[in-house]
Image (cartoon, rainbow, N blue to C red; front, side, top):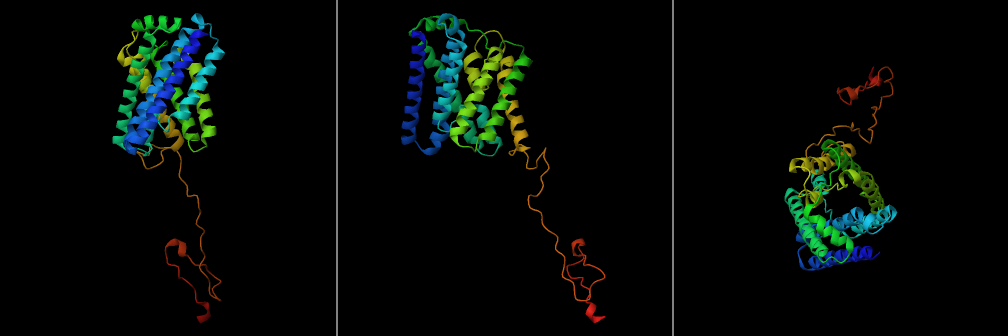
Length: 305
């Protein structure tokens, strides 16, 4: 269990370092710079570093450390729970940032700044994690340090199937996120963490279940086995398509592009009752026809006949 203790120490150190960076930058930098850049960069670095170390436990841990699947799934759930609780509103995911842009919740400059911050954070996470592996504090890290020089592709299925898997996972994630976004964090955070854990368990053997274009690019795009175009089809086009379909299904339109609902008929919630004009004392033969555009006052003044 020494290897597990080393990995747990790495997780705690990563969370503490990123949390310290968030607190310091929040106190020193303008609100816009923190929200649109530093917060996303710190969240992406935290997510990327923990994902890389978790892959070591999943791929090497069962035969080098004797870790059971139940232990790994529990640890994965706790990690996602910790991420959702500490990211301070950051998405650390390009598809979530693009979803906010499509929902007219973020401007184009702020979205581009978030995407750049996420890419920078993922690159920093990769560099720091590989530096930690180079210390070789456990047998698993010795093996990982050797394997990292000739890494294999995380895609273990056909490209169309992989794109379908990543797209389906992103679709269910974003649909759940949209449905729960206005609920209390005490319900939303565990629900999203449980969903991601279940999807990672189901799709992990096929695509490693990234559902995050920047994370996938940082972890597996440099590995041999597939071309850059094939990787892009699975890990970029798949999640983006799933996100767009989730927004379309939930809202019936893409608010940034369409004002009119494309799927659902929009009926007025409040029905306006028809008002019958008042009739004179002797006007009993024909009701008024004001609703047909002939005036509200076609009253038959019967008393004058």
